[in-house]
Length: 419
Image (cartoon, rainbow, N blue to C red; front, side, top):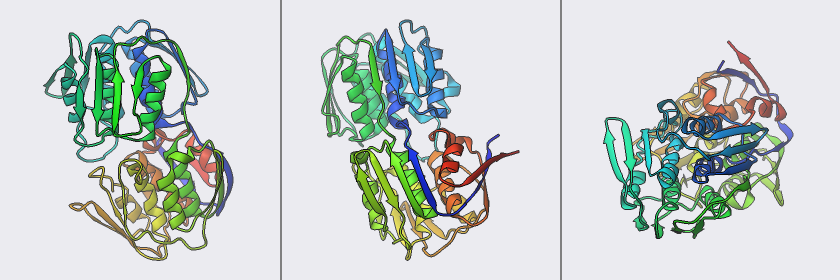
């Protein structure tokens, strides 16, 4: 079943622990391939994308065991270097396994990845970086074949600070002889988390969190026990849910220092925030203030992964708002479904702008989740709407949010599966 009925039960009065970071867990799971021994990851969210990553590891020959957020990987015997088609097509971040395979096995094969509908998001930066390191890369129809007799450290300047390309090239570069410098690297917290993981494993990575990351290749690895940080996007999603439904929400395990841009926008909209270490209380205002003009941007800017979730909240604002998407070209796919719920949003596809008319109360409707973050936007909309909302293709949302039906109930909503 993938259709869920959600009913708003009024303002929130709830406390919730934020799951471990999805976007950090996936590259760290791929990085476990680098070590012919045992890796233990704690605090990994039990979500569909993690389940897909686990299946990729098993298909490549690794042993994987799970136990309530703890994942143990034994990668002594990697027997396969081709990532199965069905897993590559399920999520775009599956491409990050290629860098780890090249470092460990000198060979990687995969089809072009699938995942969320984000417009033109090729992996050319990844492949060009592999070539700079000394890999032969061939594309035969939809299949990418990369191999090397030995990689050599080099300088790589990314045309855009792509998170996926930065992570993939970090993983490949640890298997190169000499030093690799990645310029115009992504600064996202997930890149910092991956670098921290690699260093704990015995590898040498410096500069993560800046535009220049240095990787010294050829180092030996050892067993590692590593704990994931809280998920900044999940935390932001539930804070916006509070803003839309009203009331107050306490969150625990919040990576506050990595959420400054999101928290700043919430305060602009009138949220009252109280921070105590990794605990954060949000109280929604009586009247939400509009965001006149907001641009998504690479970290530390406002994250593109939060843009969809912001839209239903701005429908309730006192005035009109304007959002400019600068990272992905098709990130407004939530708009069509929100319009079914009464939203008045106009999109200029050429300029990647969305104008959101304020003062609109959304109503329940039959909608469909086009991808992960747009699906999260529909959950937020449903939690503040009048009447029942039925969300089809709910599995998209389960790709990134742990036990989401339980979470909806904790927040005070009603959630039940329907045929």
